Length: 118
Image 1: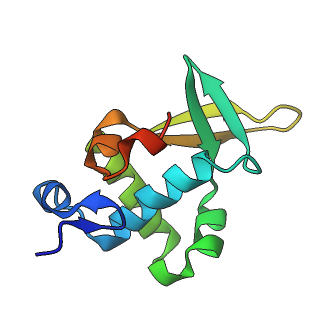
Image 2: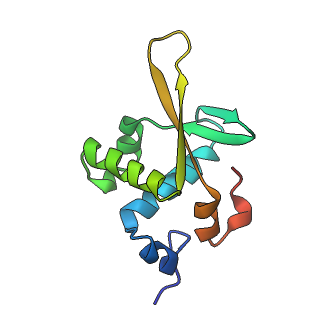
């Protein structure tokens, strides 16, 4: 058996009931959070990155899933303790934006833990 998929421990992923789409979303959040061109907010020394569902669809068309399915996947990843999300007021506009980060639980599943800083 291959030990890792997309840099994540495959055994841990299976134990959590994750599939490759979930791992791709987690990898995307990790990479987006490390990308200085993305919108970031820090709170309690944790960096969160703004990701709209539209942006995820644009960047990951291979997921080929409806927006409602993507939202459900994000909710599931949050319930599993793999991601955190925060809503921040959109300054100058009505409404808010959702920002995401991965948790230590996710980082522990990666093969290169030292690369990922929350």
